[in-house]
Length: 259
Image (cartoon, rainbow, N blue to C red):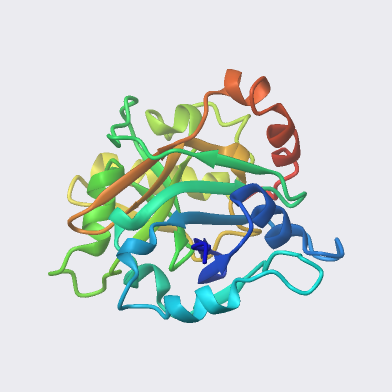
């Protein structure tokens, strides 16, 4: 019996077994079988070698078989509660970003999570919580701070993206923000400018909940997953690659809801 594919969905948070490959699963998960549901989706490939003993893989294997017409089994849910915390970072493979039209862009994991450009950051946390946060910390330090064992309020593991700030990243007071689509820009400037006068401040909440999920066109460097000990970075393609190699996906992503 062939091993099914295992996917960690971020919204909603779930571990799903499927006979579909990532592109077909992305289309099914975002659009559905009758094109009556259109929502963006994000999911990781998961190595089943890291799942044995924690999830009922035997049940998934029994149920992931074609139906009488030979159609593949699209989804078998193995977990819908605190799933990200139960799957180690080492188990995560490619990350798939699916537009509301069901078109999938697959991101490979990089060896390093360095960000070249200095300055301040705007992070959108994606799973298991979804606020927008401004920070002076680069991605790995931010992740470690959020998941630190000695922090009174902490997350066991976090997936998040860094978003475009333009000139506000280095000049929050006078930097040009004409190309930024965020609501409450004055409030965003105020929060970012605080870091100049309060060096002890590392991060601040911008919005309790992002509106309409993640707007792909606002991703700056990429998407990150990690905890206090492990970290993974998924670089977002450069604009030139988006407009050529990934043109179909990129055109679809332009219709993403702004934050």
